[in-house]
Length: 357
Image (cartoon, rainbow, N blue to C red):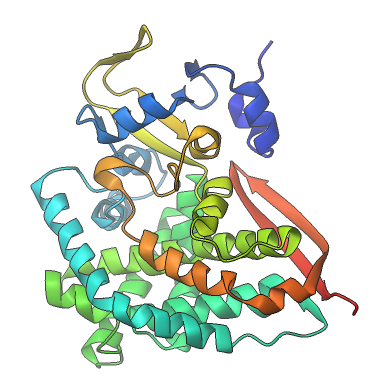
């Protein structure tokens, strides 16, 4: 007899053993589970499914109507949750133009971030390599100094906790929203943002308003942990398997270790796949790390279709820089530990030591 999928999310191997058909309903997740590349891609491109789903979740919280209003406004501004349509398309195009303008500085940013790393005989990778690299690289990309970048991450902690678990204190979340908005707004108005960074570029393309502020905050606060997870995974793979900087290695690592575990969508128009009918308001859950096993390139690591993640180039350039660090070939893995929380798998510790001559 099958166990509930929700109870298995602390182990990806257990989930893989559990998922043995391309499409089925799981009561514990209250969703149809998708384990098929063709069906997954079709759903992610289809107008019959939407990513616009935060309001229902927010309404279920035990908090004031005003807190719900602020939370709904904030999360609905995030491109990953925005309602599909002309406005969402226009905003994604503005974001892409801003990224394109900033790309020319990314190689320099990644080089500086690499130079900030200090290698010792024994290295705590997360503390000594990954975290310094990610902070240096991403803060330069956005046009923030590292102190302000750290402050936004710290003040936005409750926002990510809510995204990860679905649970949260409405009052604490709204306080966090107000805090990060004020911090970012103040930095922009006092011209503490680098002119060559992404933040100034997106303001130039889309204007200086509350929606653009929230989109920037989405990227800054929600983008840190997944990128850190990818950096840790790449260093683990490079040291363990002595990877070379070949053309597709970064794609292979990201496909094997996607920072996001799944993609959720809500059906807004009845659809049928493999004789299984998905009704309006039903949820579907695409398990990225399982579907990726049979796919090429990045797989579904950055999504597919309307909500494809535009940050792919930012992540790739950073990881390619790390992959070229030949000094990592002088190390062996001493010990490591994986942690999986609700399908989100990441290295909680990784220690390497210099190989004896």
